[in-house]
Length: 496
Image (cartoon, rainbow, N blue to C red; front, side, top):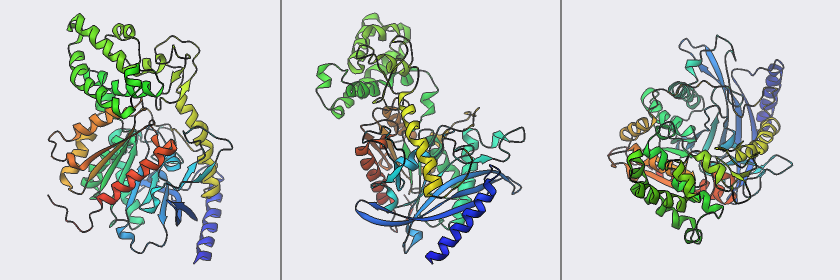
């Protein structure tokens, strides 16, 4: 059997390399390899399949080819009862590299314990991967990773079928139907996990899969989810909701008053959250009609919870943009900026003054380590040989954000499916999709509160990619492992 698999892999590899000579991938192909990993002290043999699968139009013609990597644990007696975790990153326009090679997969890039690049670049075993409890597939949407539209460019590309929030959800649901059918996973418990923009993507997919593909889920995991009801809108909630994140980031950099700095992070965040909800939002709702004495008192309290200067807060009428915070938090403490996606990272700007940093210090660091690692890993360990460029961020813009209704999509899916549970995972130092915004999103999905026992929130002492920090990599994977184990139905009927 092993010789047969080896021969098959070699033949497919040769076939693939012949096609790749024109710098184009086959629309439909797969490379299969065998591996081993030790997870939580247990040796696990697994199969990796990486390849392309078409997106079909209404006439059955391929209009795109999506690249994916699919891991299955070997020697599983009952594949039907084994969960399947379907993983997406965000952007929009980002490949699935981030969670694939740093979070849930069996291999992890070489970084230090806090997530900074280490040379020589490469990968090592992930001792905390969830492959022990679930099979995993990582999907690259159109124009990300090795995925491409057909044709790749020009007027013949029907962009409205791919590059918008509702189009993205619709074609990915159809693609997943084909994938699940080909791999005989219809009976398996299924979970979606999405990071950042992948959050609204999987929220929307939960209903699209259910109502258009008749595919029901056991769980949705939102990793640092983007909430566009807040991010793209103005108003008191959107302006106020960043304060608890400011508290967390300032605490990390020892920039808070001693009364707060002397306490543990988790002891001060509830205080900042309560002030945001009970005082700051009502104060901002008064706009320019807030009494002067109240405005001054609020500015002083915001400075207390953020580490910023009271005058700067007053000058901005209590509405402090995140970009200003990243630029000014450490202006008097070495003149560094702090990172957007992970405010533990620091950067150096040309000038101390200004409204925003010159660059994202954390993203620069991440691209430094992820790009060489994913290219090495796919080509050398998974034997996916190609001259095609792996798009860390692909050409998907302009992106149609109209009619975004993913909160309601998730609510409807949960209401219709008593099996469906949701877990939110966020890093306290994430300044792009803040942890308190993620909590607020969770609270707003179900206004009735009748399904709140099917939601859970997990916070970590790191940023947007909280799994880059070794301690949180272990904790976050264990949280996924527990979530899956606790939401398997074990014969319980799907009914209220």
